[in-house]
Image: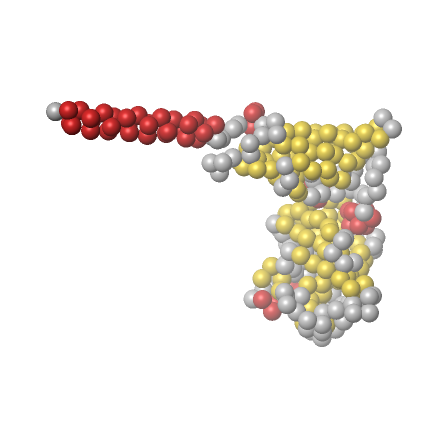
Length: 279
């Protein structure tokens, strides 16, 4: 009997230890549960210069969620970051948080920029005209799309298509089609010749410069689109896959020339070129 009682006591003690060990785990699980949008602790604070709200904003997420900040002309996933705004007046910043259980919560913050204290890249003005601007195929050129040599050509030189030929490659995206680049929300809207539209966003990275062996600049930056391509934005050498990142060869108030080559393409390998003009 004594042996049985001793074994029972050991068994009961083991159960008590196991139960006690489980309690903190349950508490931790409860603490890591999803929070609501109302519980988000996020801020967007404009940096002040000489008493005025500048166009740089400090973002801070103090909530137990992963971060995604959409500040109109770009997105950052950092918990804290300082980003550049490109317009005066009211700017909306949308925060999306990812809970541990996979659910998302969003909150929109509004800031008011008094002046563009910090320089805004000229490309935003070129492409959007300061608000929104329409671009079409440059029909003054003999070819507006086609291929040529990567790091060698600066326009279609091998397979060359005119505006009239584009519909055969991308129906509705040739003559009469256009693209509208809007500064607010960095929106890109593709308008087909039949009136159908596709919308998404765009961004620049003018630090991604492509140079030749002699040091000359071939591409001055990258244009990235999301949710939509430019007109006839596809790669024939990759099964007509959509293209969302383009080398910028020329960009000013009147001209936009883009290029794309599949990953791994070497000098004078086949690259594709798009030639547009401001409407």
